[in-house]
Length: 110
Length: 115
Image (cartoon, rainbow over all chains, first blue to last red; front, side, top):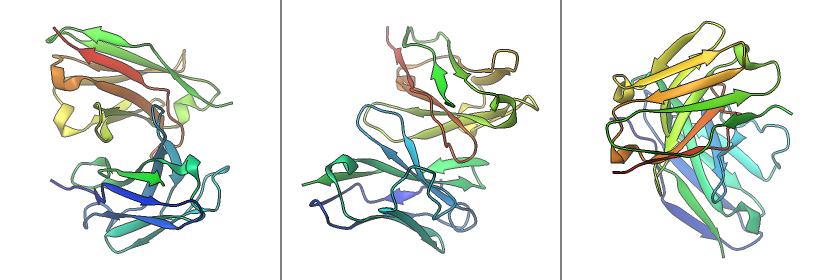
């Protein structure tokens, strides 16, 4: 079964830069675009990045996305306490014939 | 303001069914795909299926193919997710979300399956 694998957790101090990776294969990231979502505790996910590196209106430019081959990354510059959340990548999966979500990364602000 | 508003929490017995609604504000409803995603307690996000209201076409993740039905009522701008033969593992928060990018999400509906 295809899985989008993310590091379970990462942390940083305010002002630091953190990156979150998302590893897939040719049936998902390798052949389709990647979106990223932020889920604050107890709330619904929020779209953070779409089509690999596009930010929806209202999302700060501290957040950036990139993709290379079958992997993608989300970078958070100038980490803030409000950024403490779970982050999920997602990509269409040809074998699922639907979108597949990553395993999720918990970001802790120290 | 465009938003998706879901129905309230449900408690169901194993073997029963649940129906969750997702009402869209604004005039975009028929134009875009509505997805259903669930999140078990402490777990990640899982896509279940979607519907294109204007075409009334739904497709489902294979895992749910036999017991999931997604419908849409264009007259009320409301999408529905019905899951049958519930078991304890279906206990989760169920979300609706718009478009392939999931750009707008409902607030979530907690479904608890317990005897």
